[in-house]
Amino acid sequence: MNDRTCIVTRRQAEADELIRFVVGPDSAVVPDIKRNLPGRGCWVTADRLHIDKAAAKNLFARAFKAQVTVPAELGDIVDGLLSRSALGMLGLARKAGAVVLGAAKVEAAVRDGQALFVLHAREASDDGVRKISQARRATVHLGGPATPAYKLFPEAELSLALGGTNVIHAAVLAQDAGKAVEKRMVALDRYRGGTPDDLAMLAAVADDDDAAEDME
Image (tube, rainbow, N blue to C red; front, top):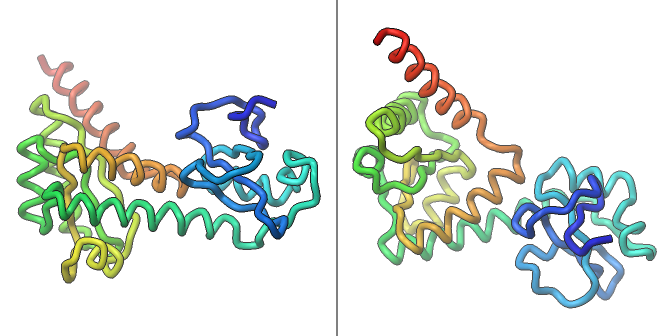
């Protein structure tokens, strides 16, 4: 089997689309998020669904051709590793000046085209999210960049990572430090099933553009 073939789907993919696993000294399956642990590895499509399937169908034992122990909470372990990686990188981006906080500053960064992506705390009010979403739509209409938005963390985790209090809205800016964070946020979002709100937003923009063309 190719080194980067998912043991569930049997499809080859780029490393960023997969999660590597190795067997630890105690014969337990260990996620290798950074892809640097020693030993023979196997790969699983980088979302919770496929990792749960690999565990439930005993596919790790088949891939490693050995008796292995799969932690019952393997899916949660991977989620935690991805989450900590994303939050850690977010904190570094904040120190590099690549993050702005607060609804007004986030909205301004979106409208100026400086925001690479937006983060909303899970506790964010519908009204606060709506105003920033309107700015995101308006920016696209005016020919600016589409700005993804994620709601991946509670307020407490965002505040801790960013060294603030009551952090509800944040924007990561389009700088080198921001791009490093984006990679990890995309990985975590994909692992958790994606962000349907963004798909709906982009669809709404497309519908509005079609309607405008029909009126011309």
